[in-house]
Length: 231
Figure 1 (tube, rainbow, N blue to C red):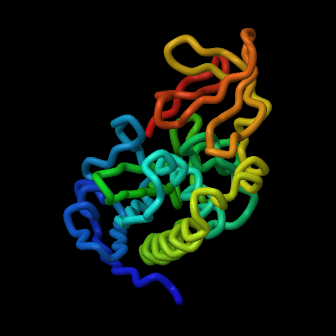
Figure 2 (tube, one colour; figure 1 turned 60 degrees about the vertical axis):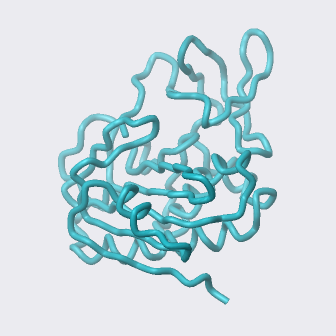
């Protein structure tokens, strides 16, 4: 049986994350908007979005242990690829990539037993800043955001039902564009990304040996010599 899901579609909000948290009353609830006034990305970064975009946040209580909640960001990325189709990829831990450019970002926040998982996705952007992209090359229309947002939330709930041990590690590894890259992370980390650990961490080979980066503990992961992402 499908998980009951309350859907709220709005034109503009300050933040779908905040809106979903305020409206949540115990049943999975998704807030979908075409624009945000104060959208935010991971670690509080400002989220930059396209003229035609999707902002969607799912408020829920996944009953995963606290130690595994950060892994839901990776599950949400896989759910995003499920619904957008094509050959998109995932940059660990929270970016959706289309054609080598960042087209979306994921944010997971926890408040006690409540988790708010958000996806920001650029649907159409005729003149994006360097490094940014969008899902389509033609405007898909105003209804596209709600359609994609509903499907993403439903797919995330389906994937999460497999539990923290069946979150989709092999799939994520196959779609992760970070693997094989020379990367850097704050404050002074350097190495080559080589794999995805069972708990969702990024396995990196450094000059001192192998380390595993935890998404909740690392602010920025970027290509060596390249800029960090926004949003």
